[in-house]
Amino acid sequence: MSTSQDKLATLLTERYGKSQQIPENIIATPQVEAMLSHKSVRAFLPDPLPEGALETMVAAAQSASSSSNLHQWSVVAITDRVLKQKISDTIARTVPTNHIPYLEEAPVLLLWIADLSRGAKITREKGEEPLVFDYLDSFLMASVDATLAAQNAALAAESMGLGIVFMGMIRNASREVAEIVNLPQHSFATFGMVVGKPDSSRTSSIRPRPEQAVVLHYNRYDQERYRNHIENYEKVFLDFRQAQSMKPKIWKDSVYQSATSLEYMGGREYLRETVQDRGFKLK
Image (cartoon, rainbow, N blue to C red; front, side, top):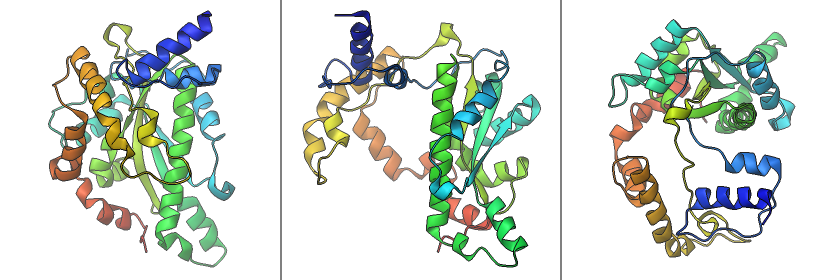
């Protein structure tokens, strides 16, 4: 087995775990290997980003697909430590902790914005109201575009030796965050991304995913097939948590808690009102 094949085999084992079926016909490319290597980083060095790193990430983000080439997203880079700490303190109040160490440590927080504000201004300058923006699809379109852009930026960051972790918790205090960073109407912070140089002394491991049969369907959705594969995933899920000194828990319990606990939402149960206040009517 070549060095490249060894690397691919190791990555696939880490991604799926030894107890699950590992796909055998993966086509190895540098890009695929980079994506298989992804892991969330929650321990950062205080070093600033390398010169040009942020601009490179944004160029990659702008290379993602954009619905109808409308560019309905923006990104706010929070580099001021006082401002970043204010956001961290605001978010921390919504979760069972008094601070978020990785957000405080990292040099940059990126807020990915579903942004229809430019389109609204352009439309009004032409003497019309942006009535299409009142509909749910416009909000969804902008949110999808922001997500596609952010994923490209994440891949670019990791290719430069940086680490990232996405922060859905930003939505816990979406109203406050919008005020802190002066977001205009018709814009909304969909999520955050913490970026920095990983602290290798506190690094995490690749988190395993379920077998492909759980998520991959051919031609028609098989509603029951996942049941035949979840038990294998439960073993690698628990093994990972134990290896990372995390509280023992099975995956199905995580799913159950996320579906039944309003405490899990951390304030997002009021998200519709906030989004509508931001100018999205969601018809």
